[in-house]
Image (cartoon, rainbow, N blue to C red; front, side):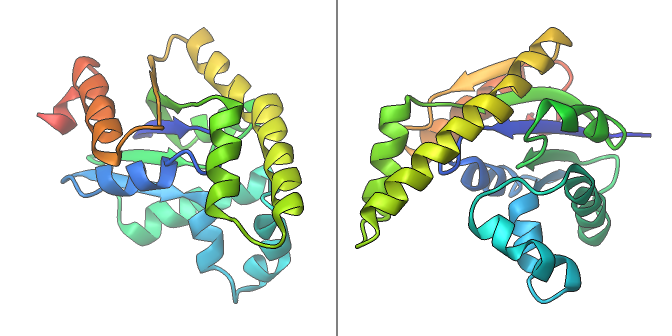
Length: 194
């Protein structure tokens, strides 16, 4: 039996983790962030091997992402009664079938904003002497998101999975309420939000 899940997709810094954590406060709802999971593995051989990859915001191998997902589900004690929010996976269309082996994706939440808003927010928050490097890194991450992750949304739409687009450049509570409202309208996910 597969786990019931919702995928949260958005560029780095769009609030995926914030919303996943907030949603996980509800009973029978869980949140798995592959980035957070790898950071918790920092001192393990796996964590040491991929720490530089994670620090640079690079993608780590698909099999590692799925290994982390399985490990997190087990360690957190999630059952098939939970609705699991995935943040950081799938990051590529190639990862979609791998996630299919573990979970049934019932809904996709797209937290998307304009490139200009994203750059302004990322650089503003990280206003350091390394401004140019941060700007270059941010532009690279946007390009990678557009080329590799954004197509995941179209793949789920092609499969008939409901996709809700929520603008993340509003208050955390407004974004949260829009996500909950969208999931209440989906017959597959509504029971977790009644």
